[in-house]
Length: 195
Length: 195
Image 1 (tube, one colour):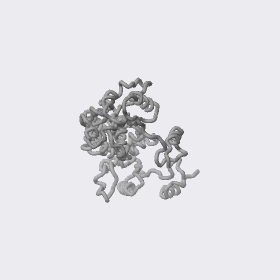
Image 2 (image 1 turned 180 degrees about the horizontal axis):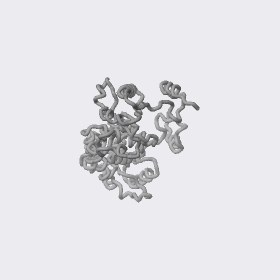
Image 3 (image 1 turned 90 degrees about the vertical axis):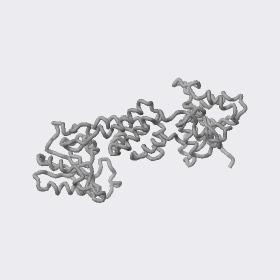
């Protein structure tokens, strides 16, 4: 029914998160209205994506240079390193403008069920970096793999003279208490603060 | 903050309907996890989209050949032509498997405010085709441009010996009466059927 290239585009688009058959169809048909120049730009950006990004030699963040803009930034507090699993977490935290230290991106989490061990993650560089710092803030997600990785980091550096902290858990701002899940509510009670 | 190529991809993705800044960011970051081969396919399909599709010489439908698969299909009723504004409409109707005739795609609607006149649309080929048919079914949308185009088609072929019909309007199946808009409700009352 559809021309072959549109069927192929639908298949490509369906691989994106949150895009099902119907949305992919709608997007593919929309793309047929784009002018050739815009399609060429979009296509070229996709094809060149992998060759134009790399991981920062220091912290492992996605970057288009050897060293990322955060590691290059002299105004950042070099005594603090926030450890995250993914570059996306760095971009999210940077937007809040609440953290002024450096980051370290593990590019994954320990997950024995998938055969992902510490040696597969960006730990060697972290171990080199922690010698000169005062605080590690563990910001891995609060799922099984995130907790496991957090425990591993804690045990790895427990004998060093530095503070190891973990992001605070509690109710999301603006959330309705009755809709919060039990674990979040438990953490919110545990982490209650003087008012 | 983001590598340049990711910013460019975010800009590309934002041009798609229903994709805002946040979703574009999420999709662009997701694309960084794709393997190079998949990105190359996706990119190539975009770049080659325009050169791999054309409009059917007979009916104006998007196709990858000179003549589309529907016009080539000998089992279709050649005495009926459904006139639509866009290829997407054909794909939608074909899925219902309720119409067994041919189509004619105008590739637009008359819209004087945008300077789109009948001469800018695929009418010449339609006029050639209607000589040999028994029925035209007008399936343009029920907005101002769709109504105007429907009126134009009716006046254009009123002296020919053929039936001119228009898609039935009424309540969408499964819709709640109280949420229907006034125009739809009016059409539903006008088009009531013996039960």
